[in-house]
Length: 210
Image 1: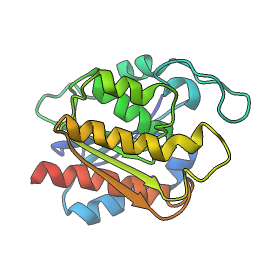
Image 2: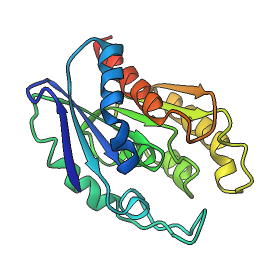
Image 3: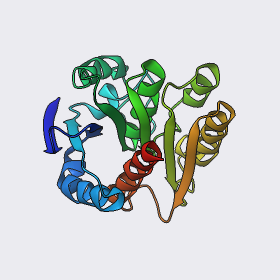
Image 4: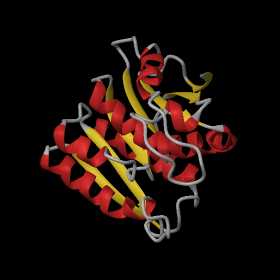
């Protein structure tokens, strides 16, 4: 993974975000929005994923659109991320958009490194993921979930389940006494990802101060 760092390297709060080329185009705007929203300093480590469908997928799954299937590279990706979370004096948060948001959720089930999860429009339709959530407990105290109000209105039968799946995910986390919110945004999956991701991180950061 390619590493891009922003903000104050000495800040006590570190945000970890998995990104692609498109995310990097808007990352500075996103960071500015987070800082404006919370009024505090932080360090952002943006890790550029090289193979999106493989490196962020917790297990193999067949193609949902196009011909590219999903791999099982999430464990290796999390091992790499953990190298950036070695300072016990820091507080770490993980987040991302789309499949990176799903990865952030999955990562919080695997370890206790992250105080909060910022999952903006996560690919919660991923086969078997809500079943996995039913059988395990998340290790993060604060979880932000969001979805566009048009995302479930698609002809793709797998992706059309995203609305029901995120409602299920929210209910499961609430039942486990996790501090969680599900926010609905206007538009489809591709509308304002930088704004949605900034809102996700801002929410979990504010919960820390509360």
